[in-house]
Length: 135
Image (cartoon, rainbow, N blue to C red; front, side):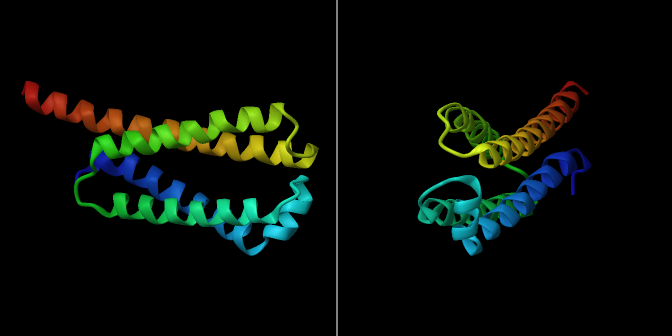
């Protein structure tokens, strides 16, 4: 296995772990989470949980490949950045209570860190390909 892929592979796995934890929390505790964050409809929380679990499964599949597909990894980075950007109007429009806004920003922070790590992993792999081609 290519050691240059380890940063991207491990970042994808960390993202899958965080998405699984979040997804299970949202799905299994939908009513409690919705109440805690000031969201009136627990179905939104549960639906987000289901989507996160699907995303986690996709991340694990991608990370399990012998050779990582960089365009797919960049799509994952873009999806993570979309989550972060999507958090801004949710917080700015006061769609959640104060606890919910703090939680949303905290989750977005973790997602942003994972996106940056994944992007750096892609760059590391691309750099090794460039070095190999120049040799």
